[in-house]
Length: 371
Image (cartoon, rainbow, N blue to C red; front, side, top):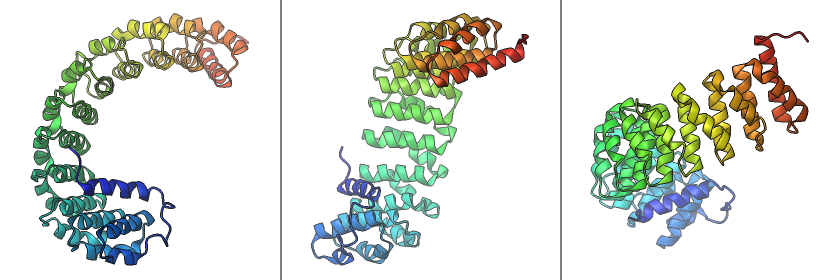
Protein backbone atom coordinates (compact mmCIF):
# COMPACT_ATOMS: atom_id res chain seq x y z
CA UNK A 1 0.00 0.00 0.00
CA UNK A 2 1.32 3.42 -0.91
CA UNK A 3 2.11 5.89 1.86
CA UNK A 4 0.00 9.03 2.19
CA UNK A 5 1.03 12.00 0.08
CA UNK A 6 2.46 13.56 3.22
CA UNK A 7 4.94 10.72 3.62
CA UNK A 8 6.15 11.02 0.04
CA UNK A 9 6.49 14.77 0.38
CA UNK A 10 8.45 14.41 3.61
CA UNK A 11 10.81 12.01 1.87
CA UNK A 12 11.30 14.63 -0.84
CA UNK A 13 12.04 17.25 1.81
CA UNK A 14 14.69 14.95 3.29
CA UNK A 15 16.27 14.45 -0.12
CA UNK A 16 16.34 18.17 -0.79
CA UNK A 17 17.71 18.89 2.65
CA UNK A 18 20.70 16.71 1.83
CA UNK A 19 21.44 19.03 -1.12
CA UNK A 20 21.64 22.54 0.33
CA UNK A 21 22.45 24.07 -3.05
CA UNK A 22 19.35 22.61 -4.71
CA UNK A 23 17.19 25.65 -3.93
CA UNK A 24 18.59 29.16 -3.98
CA UNK A 25 17.61 31.73 -1.34
CA UNK A 26 15.67 33.68 -3.96
CA UNK A 27 14.01 30.64 -5.54
CA UNK A 28 11.33 30.19 -2.87
CA UNK A 29 10.45 33.47 -1.08
CA UNK A 30 8.97 33.13 2.38
CA UNK A 31 5.98 35.06 1.08
CA UNK A 32 5.08 31.95 -0.93
CA UNK A 33 4.23 30.24 2.34
CA UNK A 34 1.22 32.56 2.46
CA UNK A 35 0.18 32.01 -1.14
CA UNK A 36 -3.52 31.23 -1.69
CA UNK A 37 -2.46 28.43 -4.07
CA UNK A 38 -1.96 25.06 -2.37
CA UNK A 39 0.76 23.87 -4.72
CA UNK A 40 2.77 27.05 -4.17
CA UNK A 41 2.57 26.70 -0.40
CA UNK A 42 3.65 23.06 -0.61
CA UNK A 43 6.61 23.93 -2.84
CA UNK A 44 7.59 26.73 -0.46
CA UNK A 45 7.53 24.34 2.50
CA UNK A 46 9.89 21.97 0.69
CA UNK A 47 12.15 24.87 -0.26
CA UNK A 48 12.43 26.28 3.26
CA UNK A 49 13.29 22.83 4.62
CA UNK A 50 15.90 22.36 1.91
CA UNK A 51 17.51 25.71 2.75
CA UNK A 52 17.31 24.98 6.49
CA UNK A 53 15.84 28.44 6.79
CA UNK A 54 15.10 29.01 10.49
CA UNK A 55 13.39 32.28 9.64
CA UNK A 56 10.59 30.24 8.11
CA UNK A 57 9.57 28.61 11.41
CA UNK A 58 6.93 31.25 12.36
CA UNK A 59 5.39 30.94 8.91
CA UNK A 60 5.39 27.15 9.16
CA UNK A 61 3.75 27.30 12.58
CA UNK A 62 0.97 29.38 11.12
CA UNK A 63 0.50 26.71 8.43
CA UNK A 64 -0.32 24.11 11.10
CA UNK A 65 -3.78 25.69 10.93
CA UNK A 66 -3.97 25.66 7.11
CA UNK A 67 -7.26 24.40 5.63
CA UNK A 68 -5.36 21.86 3.51
CA UNK A 69 -4.34 18.80 5.62
CA UNK A 70 -1.44 18.03 3.31
CA UNK A 71 -0.06 21.53 3.91
CA UNK A 72 -0.51 21.09 7.68
CA UNK A 73 1.34 17.77 7.62
CA UNK A 74 4.19 18.96 5.42
CA UNK A 75 4.60 22.12 7.48
CA UNK A 76 4.93 19.95 10.59
CA UNK A 77 7.52 17.79 8.87
CA UNK A 78 9.52 20.85 7.82
CA UNK A 79 9.44 22.16 11.40
CA UNK A 80 11.00 18.87 12.48
CA UNK A 81 13.70 19.05 9.83
CA UNK A 82 14.50 22.62 10.89
CA UNK A 83 15.07 21.30 14.43
CA UNK A 84 12.63 23.85 15.86
CA UNK A 85 12.38 22.29 19.32
CA UNK A 86 10.40 25.27 20.60
CA UNK A 87 7.56 24.15 18.34
CA UNK A 88 6.99 20.83 20.16
CA UNK A 89 3.81 21.98 21.99
CA UNK A 90 2.25 23.05 18.68
CA UNK A 91 3.18 19.72 17.12
CA UNK A 92 1.66 17.81 20.03
CA UNK A 93 -1.53 19.85 19.59
CA UNK A 94 -1.61 18.87 15.91
CA UNK A 95 -1.88 15.21 16.94
CA UNK A 96 -5.57 15.89 17.62
CA UNK A 97 -6.13 16.73 13.95
CA UNK A 98 -8.86 14.66 12.31
CA UNK A 99 -6.90 14.43 9.04
CA UNK A 100 -4.38 11.59 8.73
CA UNK A 101 -1.74 13.58 6.75
CA UNK A 102 -1.60 16.19 9.53
CA UNK A 103 -1.25 13.58 12.27
CA UNK A 104 1.40 11.77 10.32
CA UNK A 105 3.41 14.96 9.79
CA UNK A 106 3.23 15.85 13.48
CA UNK A 107 4.38 12.38 14.54
CA UNK A 108 7.19 12.48 12.01
CA UNK A 109 8.38 15.84 13.35
CA UNK A 110 8.26 14.73 16.99
CA UNK A 111 10.38 11.71 16.10
CA UNK A 112 12.90 13.79 14.17
CA UNK A 113 13.12 16.26 17.07
CA UNK A 114 13.72 13.38 19.52
CA UNK A 115 10.95 14.92 21.63
CA UNK A 116 11.08 12.34 24.41
CA UNK A 117 8.76 14.36 26.62
CA UNK A 118 6.12 13.89 23.93
CA UNK A 119 6.56 10.10 23.72
CA UNK A 120 3.39 9.49 25.74
CA UNK A 121 1.45 11.60 23.22
CA UNK A 122 2.69 9.48 20.30
CA UNK A 123 1.82 6.07 21.79
CA UNK A 124 -1.95 6.17 21.12
CA UNK A 125 -1.22 6.40 17.38
CA UNK A 126 0.31 2.94 17.47
CA UNK A 127 -3.35 1.90 17.25
CA UNK A 128 -4.40 4.50 14.65
CA UNK A 129 -6.93 3.28 12.10
CA UNK A 130 -4.85 4.68 9.22
CA UNK A 131 -1.95 2.39 8.39
CA UNK A 132 0.39 5.20 7.35
CA UNK A 133 -0.14 7.07 10.61
CA UNK A 134 0.45 3.89 12.60
CA UNK A 135 3.64 3.24 10.60
CA UNK A 136 4.87 6.75 11.41
CA UNK A 137 4.09 6.25 15.10
CA UNK A 138 6.04 2.97 15.18
CA UNK A 139 8.98 4.70 13.53
CA UNK A 140 8.80 7.59 16.00
CA UNK A 141 8.83 5.18 18.95
CA UNK A 142 12.14 3.83 17.64
CA UNK A 143 13.58 7.30 17.18
CA UNK A 144 12.47 8.30 20.66
CA UNK A 145 13.80 5.03 22.14
CA UNK A 146 10.48 4.76 23.98
CA UNK A 147 10.92 1.32 25.56
CA UNK A 148 7.77 1.88 27.61
CA UNK A 149 5.79 1.54 24.37
CA UNK A 150 7.07 -1.95 23.54
CA UNK A 151 3.86 -3.78 24.45
CA UNK A 152 1.97 -1.49 22.09
CA UNK A 153 4.47 -1.92 19.27
CA UNK A 154 4.41 -5.73 19.35
CA UNK A 155 0.81 -6.10 18.05
CA UNK A 156 1.88 -4.18 14.93
CA UNK A 157 3.85 -7.27 13.89
CA UNK A 158 0.45 -8.66 12.91
CA UNK A 159 -0.89 -5.59 11.12
CA UNK A 160 -2.49 -6.34 7.71
CA UNK A 161 -0.02 -4.03 5.93
CA UNK A 162 3.47 -5.42 5.43
CA UNK A 163 5.15 -1.99 5.64
CA UNK A 164 3.75 -1.55 9.17
CA UNK A 165 4.91 -5.03 10.23
CA UNK A 166 8.34 -4.34 8.76
CA UNK A 167 8.76 -1.09 10.68
CA UNK A 168 7.49 -2.72 13.87
CA UNK A 169 10.12 -5.46 13.59
CA UNK A 170 12.96 -2.99 13.13
CA UNK A 171 11.75 -0.72 15.93
CA UNK A 172 11.59 -3.66 18.35
CA UNK A 173 15.23 -4.38 17.58
CA UNK A 174 16.19 -0.75 18.11
CA UNK A 175 14.42 -0.68 21.48
CA UNK A 176 16.65 -3.54 22.59
CA UNK A 177 14.18 -5.18 24.97
CA UNK A 178 14.15 -8.97 24.90
CA UNK A 179 10.45 -9.08 25.64
CA UNK A 180 10.22 -8.74 21.86
CA UNK A 181 12.25 -11.90 21.12
CA UNK A 182 9.44 -14.43 20.83
CA UNK A 183 7.12 -12.14 18.81
CA UNK A 184 10.03 -11.48 16.46
CA UNK A 185 10.73 -15.20 16.18
CA UNK A 186 7.13 -15.67 15.04
CA UNK A 187 7.64 -12.84 12.53
CA UNK A 188 10.41 -14.88 10.87
CA UNK A 189 7.58 -16.86 9.27
CA UNK A 190 5.87 -13.78 7.82
CA UNK A 191 4.73 -14.00 4.21
CA UNK A 192 6.67 -10.81 3.40
CA UNK A 193 10.40 -11.18 2.78
CA UNK A 194 10.95 -7.61 3.99
CA UNK A 195 9.32 -8.43 7.32
CA UNK A 196 11.35 -11.64 7.70
CA UNK A 197 14.52 -9.69 6.93
CA UNK A 198 13.76 -6.96 9.48
CA UNK A 199 12.74 -9.50 12.12
CA UNK A 200 16.08 -11.27 11.68
CA UNK A 201 17.92 -7.96 11.80
CA UNK A 202 16.10 -7.03 15.00
CA UNK A 203 17.02 -10.39 16.54
CA UNK A 204 20.65 -9.71 15.64
CA UNK A 205 20.43 -6.53 17.71
CA UNK A 206 18.77 -8.33 20.61
CA UNK A 207 21.32 -11.17 20.63
CA UNK A 208 18.93 -13.52 22.45
CA UNK A 209 19.91 -17.20 22.21
CA UNK A 210 16.24 -18.20 22.31
CA UNK A 211 16.05 -17.13 18.67
CA UNK A 212 18.87 -19.44 17.57
CA UNK A 213 16.93 -22.43 16.29
CA UNK A 214 14.46 -20.22 14.39
CA UNK A 215 17.33 -18.34 12.76
CA UNK A 216 18.93 -21.63 11.74
CA UNK A 217 15.67 -22.57 10.03
CA UNK A 218 15.70 -19.20 8.27
CA UNK A 219 18.99 -20.15 6.59
CA UNK A 220 16.76 -22.16 4.25
CA UNK A 221 14.63 -19.16 3.25
CA UNK A 222 14.01 -18.84 -0.50
CA UNK A 223 15.22 -15.23 -0.45
CA UNK A 224 18.99 -14.72 -0.49
CA UNK A 225 18.86 -11.44 1.44
CA UNK A 226 16.93 -13.14 4.24
CA UNK A 227 19.41 -16.03 4.43
CA UNK A 228 22.24 -13.48 4.58
CA UNK A 229 20.62 -11.68 7.49
CA UNK A 230 19.89 -14.96 9.28
CA UNK A 231 23.60 -15.86 9.13
CA UNK A 232 24.53 -12.44 10.51
CA UNK A 233 22.04 -12.77 13.34
CA UNK A 234 23.34 -16.22 14.34
CA UNK A 235 26.71 -14.69 15.15
CA UNK A 236 24.95 -12.70 17.88
CA UNK A 237 22.37 -15.30 18.94
CA UNK A 238 24.03 -18.72 18.49
CA UNK A 239 22.28 -21.94 19.47
CA UNK A 240 23.51 -25.55 19.79
CA UNK A 241 22.21 -26.05 16.25
CA UNK A 242 23.92 -22.93 14.86
CA UNK A 243 27.20 -24.50 13.79
CA UNK A 244 25.46 -27.29 11.86
CA UNK A 245 23.20 -24.81 10.09
CA UNK A 246 26.03 -22.40 9.30
CA UNK A 247 28.19 -25.21 7.93
CA UNK A 248 25.35 -26.04 5.53
CA UNK A 249 25.17 -22.36 4.61
CA UNK A 250 28.82 -22.53 3.49
CA UNK A 251 27.44 -24.20 0.36
CA UNK A 252 24.78 -21.53 -0.26
CA UNK A 253 24.40 -20.35 -3.85
CA UNK A 254 24.95 -16.74 -2.73
CA UNK A 255 28.53 -15.71 -2.07
CA UNK A 256 27.39 -13.03 0.37
CA UNK A 257 25.56 -15.68 2.41
CA UNK A 258 28.68 -17.86 2.47
CA UNK A 259 30.75 -14.89 3.66
CA UNK A 260 28.37 -14.26 6.56
CA UNK A 261 28.29 -17.96 7.43
CA UNK A 262 32.10 -17.97 7.59
CA UNK A 263 32.10 -14.83 9.72
CA UNK A 264 29.48 -16.24 12.09
CA UNK A 265 31.41 -19.47 12.52
CA UNK A 266 34.45 -17.38 13.43
CA UNK A 267 32.48 -15.46 16.06
CA UNK A 268 31.04 -18.63 17.54
CA UNK A 269 34.53 -20.15 17.48
CA UNK A 270 33.69 -23.84 17.25
CA UNK A 271 36.56 -26.12 16.27
CA UNK A 272 34.20 -28.62 14.60
CA UNK A 273 33.79 -26.08 11.78
CA UNK A 274 37.49 -26.28 10.93
CA UNK A 275 37.28 -28.76 8.06
CA UNK A 276 34.39 -27.02 6.25
CA UNK A 277 36.22 -23.70 6.58
CA UNK A 278 39.36 -25.20 5.08
CA UNK A 279 37.26 -26.49 2.21
CA UNK A 280 35.93 -22.95 1.56
CA UNK A 281 39.46 -21.55 1.71
CA UNK A 282 40.74 -23.93 -0.93
CA UNK A 283 37.74 -24.40 -3.23
CA UNK A 284 35.30 -21.49 -3.05
CA UNK A 285 34.96 -19.59 -6.31
CA UNK A 286 34.56 -16.24 -4.54
CA UNK A 287 37.75 -14.57 -3.30
CA UNK A 288 35.96 -12.75 -0.47
CA UNK A 289 34.73 -16.07 0.91
CA UNK A 290 38.23 -17.53 0.67
CA UNK A 291 39.73 -14.49 2.38
CA UNK A 292 37.23 -14.57 5.25
CA UNK A 293 37.82 -18.31 5.65
CA UNK A 294 41.56 -17.68 5.92
CA UNK A 295 41.07 -15.02 8.60
CA UNK A 296 38.67 -17.16 10.62
CA UNK A 297 41.07 -20.11 10.50
CA UNK A 298 43.69 -17.89 12.09
CA UNK A 299 41.26 -16.74 14.77
CA UNK A 300 40.46 -20.37 15.66
CA UNK A 301 44.15 -20.86 16.57
CA UNK A 302 44.23 -24.48 15.39
CA UNK A 303 47.54 -25.62 13.91
CA UNK A 304 45.71 -28.14 11.74
CA UNK A 305 44.91 -25.24 9.39
CA UNK A 306 48.56 -24.35 8.75
CA UNK A 307 49.15 -26.53 5.64
CA UNK A 308 45.99 -25.18 4.00
CA UNK A 309 46.92 -21.59 4.81
CA UNK A 310 50.35 -22.21 3.28
CA UNK A 311 48.62 -23.42 0.10
CA UNK A 312 46.56 -20.22 0.09
CA UNK A 313 49.77 -18.17 -0.18
CA UNK A 314 49.63 -19.07 -3.89
CA UNK A 315 46.04 -17.86 -4.33
CA UNK A 316 45.52 -15.59 -7.32
CA UNK A 317 43.63 -13.00 -5.25
CA UNK A 318 45.71 -10.53 -3.26
CA UNK A 319 43.13 -10.32 -0.47
CA UNK A 320 43.32 -14.08 0.06
CA UNK A 321 47.12 -14.11 0.17
CA UNK A 322 47.07 -11.22 2.66
CA UNK A 323 44.53 -13.02 4.86
CA UNK A 324 46.52 -16.26 4.75
CA UNK A 325 49.74 -14.45 5.66
CA UNK A 326 48.01 -12.67 8.54
CA UNK A 327 46.58 -15.90 9.95
CA UNK A 328 49.91 -17.69 9.67
CA UNK A 329 51.36 -14.91 11.78
CA UNK A 330 48.67 -15.45 14.41
CA UNK A 331 49.38 -19.18 14.48
CA UNK A 332 53.16 -18.55 14.54
CA UNK A 333 53.89 -22.08 13.34
CA UNK A 334 57.47 -22.90 12.35
CA UNK A 335 56.23 -24.70 9.22
CA UNK A 336 55.18 -21.36 7.75
CA UNK A 337 58.61 -19.73 7.98
CA UNK A 338 60.10 -20.85 4.66
CA UNK A 339 56.87 -20.38 2.63
CA UNK A 340 56.58 -16.86 4.01
CA UNK A 341 60.21 -16.09 3.22
CA UNK A 342 59.67 -17.32 -0.33
CA UNK A 343 56.51 -15.22 -0.67
CA UNK A 344 58.42 -12.20 0.63
CA UNK A 345 60.86 -12.55 -2.25
CA UNK A 346 58.24 -13.13 -4.95
CA UNK A 347 55.14 -11.18 -3.86
CA UNK A 348 54.43 -8.08 -6.00
CA UNK A 349 51.88 -6.46 -3.64
CA UNK A 350 53.37 -4.18 -0.92
CA UNK A 351 50.51 -4.81 1.53
CA UNK A 352 51.07 -8.57 1.39
CA UNK A 353 54.83 -8.13 1.77
CA UNK A 354 54.34 -5.95 4.86
CA UNK A 355 52.03 -8.56 6.37
CA UNK A 356 54.58 -11.29 5.60
CA UNK A 357 57.35 -9.37 7.38
CA UNK A 358 55.17 -9.00 10.46
CA UNK A 359 54.20 -12.67 10.45
CA UNK A 360 57.82 -13.74 10.10
CA UNK A 361 58.71 -11.49 13.04
CA UNK A 362 56.04 -13.24 15.16
CA UNK A 363 57.30 -16.67 14.15
CA UNK A 364 60.83 -15.63 15.07
CA UNK A 365 59.59 -14.50 18.48
CA UNK A 366 57.96 -17.86 19.17
CA UNK A 367 60.61 -20.02 17.48
CA UNK A 368 63.91 -18.10 17.72
CA UNK A 369 66.45 -18.97 15.08
CA UNK A 370 69.96 -17.61 14.83
CA UNK A 371 70.20 -15.01 12.07
